[in-house]
Length: 161
Image (tube, rainbow, N blue to C red; front, side, top):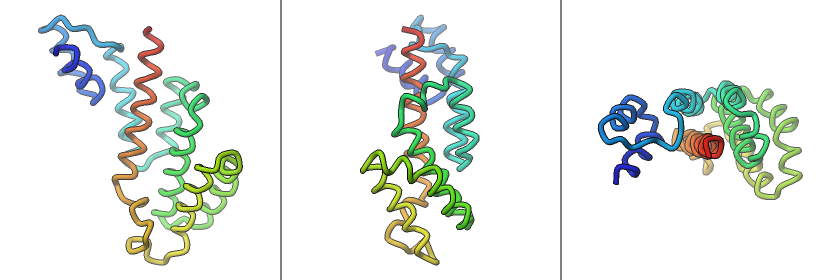
């Protein structure tokens, strides 16, 4: 049971609680608690829509995370495209989609379908009422942030093991 509680505290980023729990219960976490704040900074950057910053932070932590996980990298780039659309940077969004995401779509049918869904947001003047408006919803950011968080956790537990 203690291991379960520790795992929750570490996964959700409760550094101080995890540290106190470790001292009181003697349960050692699977990763270094010092790395939690770095992981939470990445998660927060995605949740706030600062995807470029998040990618930079992930690469600072471990460049292999994005190199070895093309789906995660695509989802971060897709989120970056969504943020450009959200901010009304249409030309920049189109250029970014063509240069960064289209080549990945050519390699992977799933990525292509996701890219097409995202780019179709550009066809609507009022994106809040379009059928794909959920891509602009905060839940999309949270989903991407959660995926990044899980990938970082996985890489950190492999490093320790």
